[in-house]
Image (cartoon, rainbow, N blue to C red; front, side):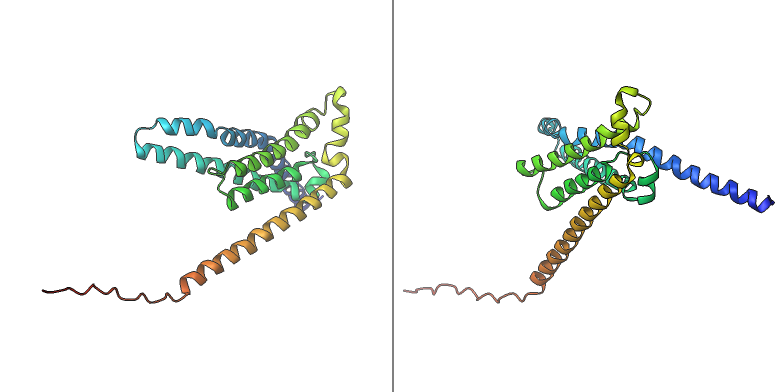
Length: 223
C-alpha cells in the first residue's frame, strides 16, 4: 500500500467512525430530551399554580414566557434530532428503534397542534397535543429500551429481532418512507396554510377603508 492509500483509509475510518458515534449519541440522548419534553408539557398545572402565587407582574411574565420558550424549544430540538430516522442508509445499517420515524411524526403533529390552536387556553387542544406527545414517546421508549439497549438479554430476544431497524431493514424502510410521506404532507399543509394566512393579512392591510361621515353637532336653539 502506498502512503496515499494509508492516509485515505485512515481518513475514511475516522469519518465513518465519527458518523457512527454521532448517530449512536443522538439515539441514546433522545430519551433524555423526550423525558424532559414530557415533564415540561405535563408540568403545566404546576407552572400555573406558581404563576398565581407571583405577586410581582414582571416576575409572573418572565416565569410564564420562560416556561413556554423552553417547552416548545425542546419539542423543536427533539424533532430536529429525530431527523436521523429519515436517513435510509442509517436506518438500514444502524441499530435504531424501528418505530423512531413514527415517533418523529408524532412530535411534528404536536408542533402543528401548538401552531394552529391555542394549546394553553384550549383544554381540548392541550389534550390532543398531550396524546400525540405520549404516543411518540412510547413508540420511541419501547424499542429503544427493550430492543436496542437490551440486545444482550436473552429473554428479550423477540424485541431485538423485531424492533431494531437493521434486524428487518425492509420493514424499517417501509415505516420510514410512510412516516416521511406523512411529514411531507403535514409540512406542505402548514406551508400553504401560512401562505393563505399571509395573503389574507396583506389583503386586509391593502383594502381601502371606507370614509367616515363627519359628525354634525346638534343645532343650538337660541331664545
